[in-house]
Length: 262
Ligand code: ACM
Image 1: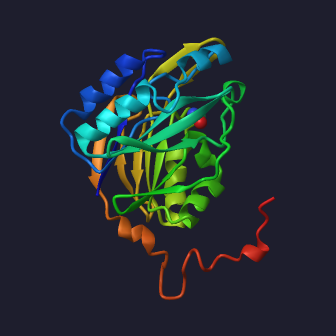
Image 2: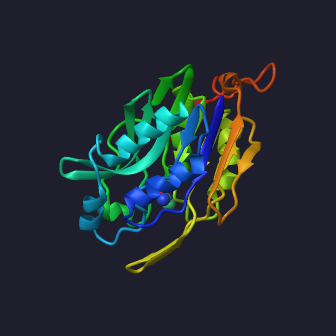
């Protein structure tokens, strides 16, 4: 399957310009799976809860309409971050869209820094989406810091992890090589670039979007400071074989009776 990412440079609060940016870079590309960054349409650095509420949307808002159109044009399953409004709560979420409809929403469970001031943390279990013969798991940015996230998705049978991100720390890209290796899953980390100086905060996003293979190889690595698009062909059946030799299976060999999870 052909999987890839669009590494954008969102303009804070300018949803339609940010949609245009994605269209411009995707061009006439056809693919099977496209990942866009976390909060790709709104920008990241909110300065108040009211501002985050004002930019949030229900699951049938402009962002999901845009993603449905993108899925239609490219033929791809699309996973992308958005600020989700649901009743009195807003979540840092990702939509997964395929064949003219929203098939699911993942709400980020590990909120980073001031996200805790605006967003409610995810309130739904991790799950995988079985689409077009592939099992896709979703996590958002800082979720990577908790190895339980990818492990849970791997235990649920994920072949590939869709990972919209707005990374500001320098560690994720190299950590993903290990996370993918020890879980034998593929991952597409779609990060953004640029700088947002808002309120007391000054974030420089680290780019370096990455497609990581089931064996820890880096199949695609974007520059730290340029908008960038890339796609690679992967064979997801590799992720279904958890044997690393005749005697070791990385799932069956776990000794859960000796682990401390609390
Ligand atoms: C992050 O989770 N956006 C750093």
